Amino acid sequence: MPAPILQLTDVRTHFPITRGFLLRREVGTVKAVDGVSLSLGRGEVLGLVGESGCGKSTLARTIAQLVPTTGGTVILEGRNLTSGSAGEVHAMRRNLQMVFQDPYASLNPRLTVFATLAEPLLVHGVCPPAAVPARVAELMNLVGLAPRFMQKYPHEFSGGQRQRIAIARALALEPKIIIADEPVSALDVSIQAQILNLLAQLVRKMNLSLIFIAHDLSVVKHISDRVAVMYLGKIVELGPALDVIDRPQHPYTRALVSAIPTANPDTERTRQRIVLAGDPPSPINPSVGCAFHPRCPHAQEKCKAAVPPLTQAEPTREVACVRLGEI
Image (tube, rainbow, N blue to C red; front, side, top):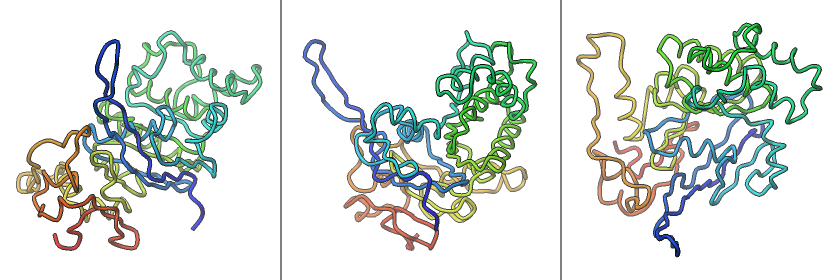
């Protein structure tokens, strides 16, 4: 197997909780990401799914070094981003770009499309100033926007067009990895399909590696090669997209898959949803043992004893469950 372009080993991102005004003291820790190990191959699309608050966006920002890591390593093309200097991280960021969830917030309302797309080209010295207009026009054509709109401002575009501009900005430096943090959740359904098809085309055309974060498992199944399921800062299931969604093994993944709506009204009326009891435990004070056991319908006493590691369930599937094979 070729070496992965991105390798995460035991990545942890914790945020201290402090109290006091003059004499501030640490009274707790939010374990947003707690021991995540992943790899991403060249040209691969990795879907990352889970409930709100499970740590998906924090993991994305940790990979991009927008928030510092508490522990573990992030290796990009053989270079450790977590121990690199600010200059080294800045240089390596050309190869790793992000598309954020809300195109209304991620674009500067005071900059035209031209200024937005020209800025990374000039900051990183990708091309001389005289060649910038042609490169901006090329980027706009790449994402399906007419170059004649480059002097317009973000408020003059629709939500889908804004997200295309955000994708063009991410592509400006010709990165090798793009992290898309719920890029279609703020868009209409018809526009979602257009953006998903655009991302899939760009992955094939430019041989990009993509980390695609979403809540909608049907969307993730459509675009992803592999899927990682995240719960309370940890990966609980990892494997090929079709296997994970069609044959989920972890009880949490089964609950997520059962919530996927179907287009057939007869099937929709008769299908059985798995409704989880209670709310996710607090990342400040997680449960002892498996974090999912307070909500798991199959939990036993041994589930409270230790945190289950990701275990090889199949040649291409890993699952973190002490009752693997019993349920």
